[in-house]
Length: 153
Image (tube, rainbow, N blue to C red):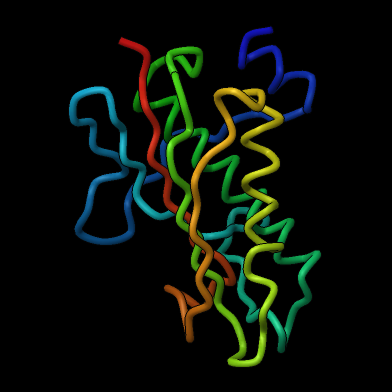
């Protein structure tokens, strides 16, 4: 099944390429690798504000990470022109705005990881990853995620 067909089955419509909010580009390709800049969580088109362990719980954080994954896929679509060109999701790096005592960053990040596996299948979508707790993120958002993918030759 094509990636477009999987997205349609999941009821996901990819957003257009977002304009960067600072001095960077949304993606860089070098060789067969594409590096997608960090994307912040958005809800209803606005920054999804919150801190895990204080103003929001793990399930809401997981939903926010899933929303980030959809935005990342929109950027990846713009970068590649065709998501079926993806050979492998290589690495996910997730930053979770969290209280000092919060310890479920990995569960929040599952919102992104699980969606990538659903969209690309386990052979392409399974990836290495890191999930970090941080004191704050741009505009007070709850989650920021970046992505590295490998393209088919």
